[in-house]
Each structure stands twice: as structure tokens, then as C-alpha cells.
Image (cartoon, rainbow, N blue to C red; front, side, top):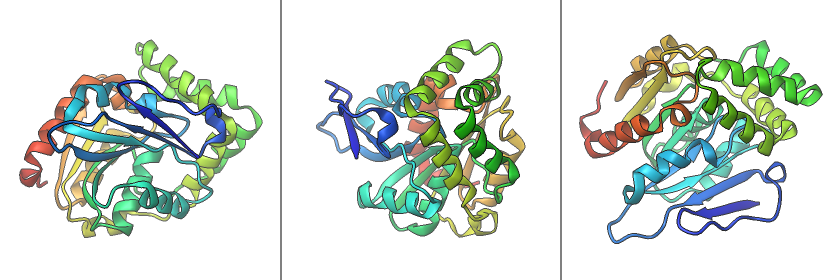
Length: 260
């Protein structure tokens, strides 16, 4: 099931968020040819993660946001490729970044550029299964814990935005997303095969996936550019949408020169 929302005039499905595996936002038509961009939010997050960024990008992009909760990473990859344009730029945060990496590895001829945030290319550890169990048994407590970890303590507005998204997505879907995350293979050894330009943005204060992981990710990608945002946590587009949009526009304009 797909929920489609246009930035000018919102049209929503009557079905609640927790019953849909995927959410799509498309920007309004425009005279100039926009860049097709697929955005994949973090675990327990929805289209609100990228709303302000998409608004600021305006007519430069045709944006599609996919909220995915397929049972495996491979199934998520297949869902993206089935719904995405023939060629597209792919952006993902955390869980969404892990999916984006796997999509690019599976179909590099279709992904013209990548924008990655807060994702770990290493193999999953035992904490992922603990997250699955926690979201199934006591979702509210786990969501509160994640909100405290995801953004700096002073970023109360971003924390509330995350909790609102998580409430809409629901613990059951969040557990399915975490289970899929646990099914992924390590990607570190395969990063050197990705020849497309990659924008890597990380929060300096990320407590979930440290900025050192982002630096190592950028180092392993042949054509990556790495940006660290001061006083920012795990969710850059939610915490610093204006700066993220500016960096992304520069990347789209100059991606031929973005070689790490």
C-alpha cells in the first residue's frame, strides 16, 4: 500500500501508518526537469523526517519518500527498485541508509548518486535483536530511549518530532524494520565497487553511530565527500534541515567534482 502526498495540496490514505509498508511523497510538477530523488527514512520514522528538506529543495527535485518495513533487507531493496524511477538519486538515514547502500550495490546502473547519513556498513550485532524484542514487548519505553539517544539533549523539538513519527509508525512496524536490519550482510568489503558520487553527512554528536564510522564509510567509497554537522545527532535532516538542503543542492550541482 502506498500513501501519496503532494507538497501542494496533501492527499492522504485513510489507512493508518502502521498498516502501510511504504509511504511516497512527490513534489509538484515544474517547468524545469527536476532530479528524481528517493528518500528512505530511519527506523520508526516517516515522511516528516525529510519534509523540511524537500520544501527547501523546491523545484530542484522530484521527491519520493519510501517508508519500508519488508521482512528482509533484500525484500526492502526489491520494493525500492520496483517503485523508484529508472534512474534516481537515493538518500537514506540510519536504517534507511543501510537500505540505500544495498540498493546501490544491487543496481548501481540505476542509482546516479547517494546521500547517506547515520548508517553502519558493518554486519549487525546482537543489539539489533534486543531492539526487536524491546519494540515488540514495550514499544513506548524503547521509543523514549531512542529519542534520548538520537538527538542531543537540548534538541527537544527534534526529539518530540521523532517520538511523533514513531507513534505514527508503531512498535510493530518498527520491530519488523529492526528485524530486516538484522538480516543485512556486511557492506564494508563491497563499498569500493560503488562508482557513483556519494554525499555523506553525519552529526558530530551522533550517539548511535559515531562520526568516526561515517568518516570510515566515506574513506571506503571511491567518490565520497564527508560533512560533519556540529551539535547534531543521529538525524541530520530533522535537526538541521536548512544546512542539509544547502549541502545537497551543492552536491547535485557539483557531483562530478565530488571525489573523496
